Each structure stands twice: as structure tokens, then as C-alpha cells.
Length: 388
Image (cartoon, rainbow, N blue to C red; front, side, top):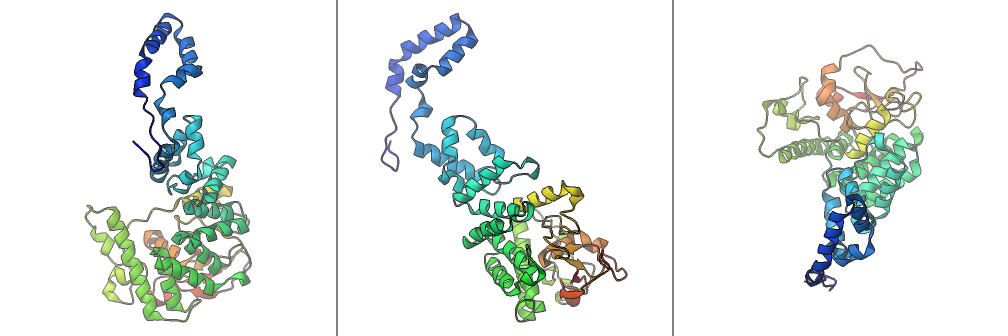
């Protein structure tokens, strides 16, 4: 049997049959002597190990193919690491660039409590091998957790060039907020362009963000009808993703019920609202889970003096400067990095908790009060957000 490279698999059966007598003699020696000493001697003896070892006779390209399949289907990092520590040969082949470039999102899901220099080196090795998921995950960690803004943004840009939707949307959030710089570093037009590219790739949060930008004329010429179209498309895609993940499940009536507040169009149909159907929360990306775990385990969930985390539990993004995120203008108790996080958190949690309060003030007794993110407040009468 030949491989694609024209190599033949060696025929070991004849050699093994010829050496049967020698194998029987070795077994007798093992039974007669000390079992532990003989086992150790048999494992370390190069003569015995080289006589009939099917694994060592397998060609490298076959093992690489198997390891590529494993790295692309691993359910967690441990599934792949357990193979690497089996022997030196698998460890060497497992770190091949072809194998690392196929690593799946779940295989790269490093937990914040297990973060170490070796984890950093492994993600860097995967990123250098061209794995876009590793570029995005390591870029988010460096930008927000390790505060290495330039390197983190470069890695996310590398993933975005390869049409990674989450990386495109994350860069859009950075441009909208001016993250890593001052307020004057905001580039709304660049944020809209990045959102449009991610929305074209089907990213639900980018679709919703782009719809609100068009509705409010935020970084782009106002077009209410086009903005509504993008919001409806985001709601429909969000529902389709949940139904595709559970094809045999019966759709609960609660998914298709409208929110308690009034809507502008559609007679209360959730697909025509700013916030969509009341479907279960989508699974957070491993990079966002890492951010949430990283900051929740440090300083009581406070990223720094005067800084806040995005109130949506599935986001994890922190402020990089004071008053970077925008607050709910109704209660002032929550803040979000984007309209998409606001929409998700509203239907999952905040619509039950949000109650009108007196005009809130910042910790310093100052408030800029620039109402630049409506989030459905002016349209649907639900909640608005103001930049603090």
C-alpha cells in the first residue's frame, strides 16, 4: 500500500514471524526472573524495541494526518495534550505547523486559572502556524488582559485579514470606543466598515450593531429603513442558529413572545424588535470566557482603578480608560461596550432589573451626558444608553 508521497508501508509480518522464537525466549526470561527488572530491561533495550514495533514503522505523513484530525476535533485542550505526552515522536509531530494550524476553537480554549508561560508559548506557536483562532484568542488576551495593546491588535488584525468574523467585530468595538487610547482616538467610520465586513460574514452581533448605527446615523449616514432590515436579519439569524443547534427541540412559546415594553413595528413580533426573540444565551467564545474568568478572579472583578467591565456576562471586555463604556440612561446601573451586548443583556437579565432612577452622576460628580447610543430607547421606548 502506497501513500500520497509514494512511500510504501513496510511489511513487518514476515520479520515478526521469523522472530517468534526469540520472543518466546524473552517471555521465559521475564517469567523466570524479577518481573519489574525484566519489564524495565525490555522497554529500554534497543534490540527488543527495534525488532517488531509497528508504531515506529508508521510513516510520518500518516501520523500527521491522524494528529491533524485530532487537533481539529478535540473537545478540550486536554484531549490533545494527553497525546503529546505519550512519547517523544508524537510530541514532536504534534507540534508540527500543519497540525497546529488545524487546531479547533475548543482545543485552544485555555482557562484563565491555568494560564502560564507555557500556555502563552503554545498559543503563540499556533498563531505563528497560521491558526486564525489562535491569533484572535491570543490577541484578545494580550490586548485586554496583558495590556499589550499593539501586539494584541496586530494579532486580531491578522485574523481579520483571514475573514475571521469575531476578530473583525472586536476590532470594530475597539474603534467605536477608542480602546487603548484616548477618547479622540475613536474612529467611527472604521468601526462601521469593520462591522459591515463582519455582518457580511454572518456575525449576529455585527449585524445588530450595524443596524443601530444606520438607525442612529452613528458613523454613517442615517438610513432608518436599512437599519431596521439589518436588525430583523440579525434576529432571524440568531433564532436560526439556536434552532440549528437543537433540530429536534420543540420551540417554546416564550421564545416568540414580545418583551414587556412596546415595540415600534410589527405588532409586538420579536423578530421585528431591536432585541430579537427570547432565545437562550449563545455560547460565549473561549476568548470572552477567558476575559470574564481573568477579571473575575482578580481585584474583585475590577479591572483597574475607576474602570468597569461590560455588564453582559458573556462579553468580559474591560475598560481601558475611565468612562470608556456607556451606561443605561434609565437606571445608570449597567454599562456596555456595544449595542450588541446591550441587546443580549437586556432580554437575558436587565429588562427585569431596569427601573427609572434619578439622574445618576459619575464617581467624580461629573457627567458628559453625550447621548450617542440609543440602543432602542428612542425607537422602542425600552432603554437608552449614554456615554459617561
